[in-house]
Length: 442
Ligand SMILES: [Zn+2]
Image (cartoon, rainbow, N blue to C red; front, side, top):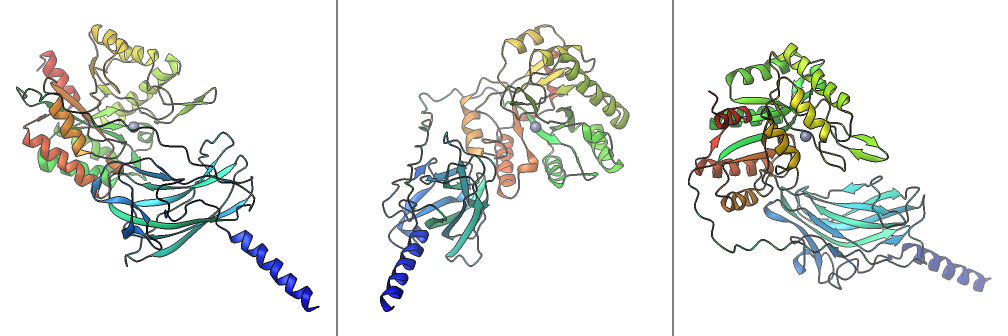
């Protein structure tokens, strides 16, 4: 009997041991970056970030950083419905980065749902253990941890000792896909000639709509800021919320329109993507002329009724996996009786040239390297300043931004951009003001 119980205890402890074994390779970075993939240049391995052992992962930055952080572990095979638990130690005061459970399908493609994440932060600045549980989806074939720094933030988080439990003991880890080679920073071959005159800046802000009968506070903030700097801007709105626009929202738009400081431009009916043969497309991509025309007409009618003016400038919404307009959109721009300017979503091309040559619509196109934001929603003053200095011949720049995404340090970064442009004595105009100045219209 004694022997039986001894064997029983040995066996049960073996089983428990097997279930708890962490199969994630190099889970605490003691072998450097082995079996991890680093997709950014900010995340580092350092002894200072070690919870135990000699090395840990440090993600983020102690000053504003517009680059996203991306560090991925090896994959562990799972089967659909399998419950896995990720746990790790982290130390950091700001919620500037997070650890995600990533499931992959059998082709190694990341599955977008479920994608639970934990953004560790604790004001005490000490190490804490965190854990996160999730069930593998129907097409789940493997699981990994992805550590992400949210760009346009300030704050460092240290991570160490990752582990997955609930993994079958007989599986073998698959190394992570190495990151794509990063483009080398552009080398300055020659110093550009100094600018003869300051550039005209068209500040293009996207995605204004009524939220709960009100103007979202981020729009109030940007509007107040522009007013305090005595500069003009252009607010792009979607129009479906105009159907039940409340007086507060309507009056807010009207007063700014009437002051001449803000041009409100047409950014689409609903900015929603639609599906075409399983492909997600943006609002004005691959839709019939009639459907596109109706979206313009409905919006113009509402603008005239509710706001007392029609839109003269258009800029299509993004999203989806295609382009942001097509030949039908060009024809609508030619046919709409009010439209005069197009905040073109790219550098001018043949379609744009043809439309502009017809004489009615002026194309205001983009210079990719000169913009308010690097990634969408992330102001980047370094990029803007470098780009501005590299393009001394260009007369105007359309700078695109999404103020509703500019919480905290991102707004401060935008202020830095305006500081620079004002030091350069740039002239801030609305799109229509600029079009009139080019065409010699008073
Ligand atoms: Zn948009």
